[in-house]
Length: 396
Image 1 (cartoon, rainbow, N blue to C red):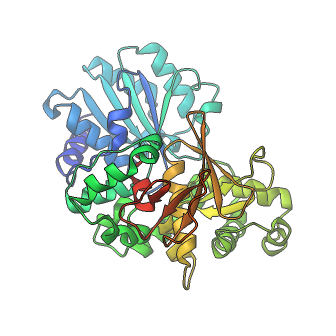
Image 2 (spheres, rainbow, N blue to C red):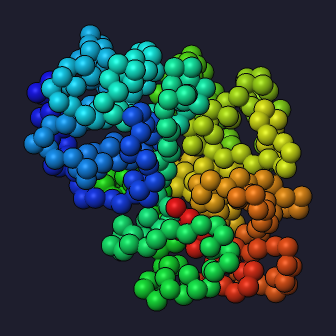
């Protein structure tokens, strides 16, 4: 076990800076079994190590990080390892990429029952359906780690500490909030940089961001989707082609019949694959009110604006970026989005309240419809029912 402690110490001591994530404050760390789901590339490993650094002393050796990619666990069970760890005074196990271990959910259940004094925090892919897992659904508390919001991006690059706001706060008090922020920074100065490369933490690394993102996307398809959903490797080219075709038309209404022909798969398989891409956080699907999967979505968006650049070769319309930004940031605030009856209208449900948003680039005339909220990208501050779009990036 000593080699694992040495690795743990090295990783914690060499953690590059502390990137404050809102989720760190939202998790109830008193829970015995905690699952943290997140798309590949959003910083799950760094999040676990940051937790270890902030809450535990290295010399006490009561917290241990393990990556389940370790070949050691092809011959050692999680349960027996956990028992030895507890006998040595261990209190918290951090298991990264737990789905790499066979029968992981069964053994986590066994650890939960046999070692009530042991806390286990594990990470997994968004493709995993923990709420349907027979072993864990009743005992695990699941949280989602997302990519950087615009607020988190600004905090990092400008060394600030801006707070998040609820959607109700933004709608009711956007003028005051925007004025307070604009007294400290120029929020539009960095807005398009965030669109291009601000969602994934690895933009901080000294590597080509687009190439790194393409590599990450392919890993999402090959590992997160194919492996976890147990799809044959021979279908990978069809899945990649489907994602590419969807990226070319996004945001747009998918033609399921044509996609079926182009990808040489059935219509039912197209819709199933689209759901897999959604769960992997590669696309978002927008339905009309009263409709949901497995029905055909009314619109398909890329999951975040960063994905649009390496996948969609050529110019990208500003309106497409703005709507994708809105969907991504507002959806991440745990609001539910539906497509309005009129083109370009989003219906946002939040805490039993319903709002209608229209996303625009410029502040034009005629924005006096009291039933509509206008999110405008060119404004630093708004008025009445006209809200600066960038401020919706402060919801988490």
